[in-house]
Image (tube, rainbow, N blue to C red; front, side, top):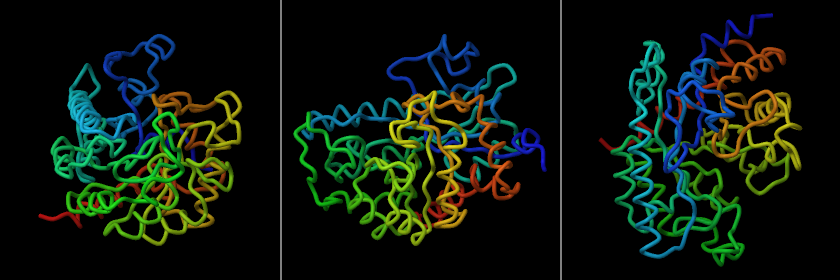
Amino acid sequence: MMDPAELHATLLAIDTHIDIPWPTGPDFFDDSPRDQTGRRVDAPKMRAGGMKAGCFAAYVPQGPRTPEGWEAAGNRALAMLDAINGLARDAGDIRVRIATTANAVEAAHRDGAIAIVPAVENGHAMGEDLGMLAAFRAKGARYLTLTHNGHNALADSSNPRKDLGDGETLHGGLSELGRAAVLELNRLGMLVDISHVSAQGALQAAMLSRTPVLATHSCVRALCDVPRNVDDLMLDALRDCGGMVNITAMPSFLRPGGRPDGVTVSDFVDHIDYVVKRCGLAHVGISSDFDGGGAFSGWRDASESGNLTAELVRRGYDAAEIGALWGGNFLRLLRRAEEAADA
């Protein structure tokens, strides 16, 4: 059996969904323990855990679907993207780069630098203005999560917000604006993320998009029946469009009623196994949702990322397969989006 630690050290391990503290938080290069900083991902923890790259999301909570609400959401997303871009610097022997293409991620890895890929979580951030998507792309964003908890102007959410007056559906999946947004994301070379989107909206996005769609931070509904997870029909749609689901570290998505102390690395890899068997290894990856609620026993922060590799080795995955799961599959989708973008 190959040595998991030695293998992990060689991988280009990419976490496809990480949140950032907002509006302020500890310095990204602060090496203090997690119980002092409250942060599960920072540059020292990424280096300690062999996490070579991560998608850092400008997360915008759902608010009122009004001009004022859209303006506030857009301003927040732009400011958060500026903060994410500001993480790139050298400090001591740690180097951090912003990487907005698949080639740039690989180049950072070759140079021994941590790569950060910006993203935006919740299409509420664009309001009704498709032009905002180009503004996000100009600041490096490589994917847009169409919704969060609560319906927005683009699509129905898997988790309606009664406190915002949501019914079960608002648009019957994607709105006309949402359909236009999917095509604009294609034009810009940004990936369409269907995590948080209703089942109907996610299927519509997969059928409409000219490039593969993905769920950047979701789990398998057949193993844990919560609305945020991806059911078998959607898994098949992701396979058929060339997309993928990135299994995430949210305890309640991994086991029914799951809590951090009661969920393990084995539970996490069960979800990977399920997708591999149903759809093929090319259609699954890894994410944490660290600093956004993700964490469980054995993967409590980025420094423990090697534990996932050890479990994958124990289950018989080989080095090439583990490399694909940890990042190769995601880079393939980034490249597909880049190739399809308008010049």
